[in-house]
Image (cartoon, rainbow, N blue to C red; front, top):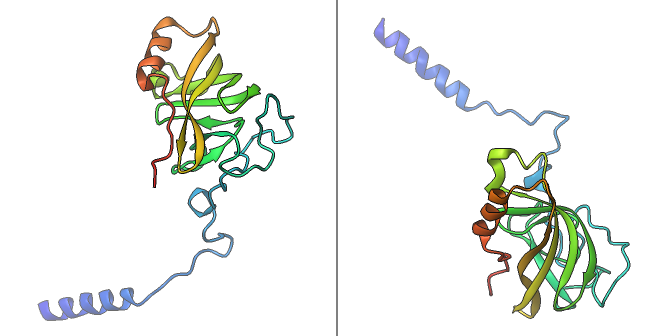
Amino acid sequence: MRHTILAGALLLAVAACGQETAPAGDVDVGTGPTGQASPEPGRDSPGTASDAPDQEGGGASGSGPGEGTFVLNRYGDEAGFADQRPTDYVATEFTTFRDLEWDEWTDTSARGEGEVSGTWCLGVDCASDPYDIGIELGDPVEVDGTMYFSAYTVTEYDDDMPADQREAMEQSDDGRLAVPVEE
C-alpha cells in the first residue's frame, strides 16, 4: 500500500512538472514600470512642460547632455536620467519635488516653485498633501562632460509647513542633490 501511494505521488509530481501555462491573452508581456524604457538623457521627464520658453539661457528644447546644466532625476527611473526644468523631480532618496514651475534656468542656477514631500514627513502624510515651497538649485558639478546641479536651497516656505518638518527636511539630505557617479 505504501509503495502504491508513493508511486502515485511521484507520477503526479512528474506530470505537474511538464505542464506550462502561457500568459493570459489580455496581458502584454513586458509592460508596466519594469517593461518601460528609461527616458533618454536630455528628454523631458514625464509631466515636463517642454513647451515652456527658454529663459535666462536654459531650457529643455531637445538639448542633449553637455548642453546646459541638468539635474539627475529619478522620477520613474531608479537609475536616474539627465533632465532640465522637470515638473516632477525625485531629487534624492529622501526628497521629491512635484508640480514645479521654473522661473529661471541658467548654467549656474535655477529658481522655481512647487511642492515638496519625502521620507522625512511620512508620519504626517505629506505625500498626499505636500508642502508649497520656493526652490533654488546651484553648485553645478561636471560629471562625464555634463553639468549637474548638486545643491538646493528652499527659498520660501508656505505657512502650512511646521518648523519640525522644515528641520527634518534639511537634516535628511542637507540640501544636496544626487548626481551621477563618474564612469
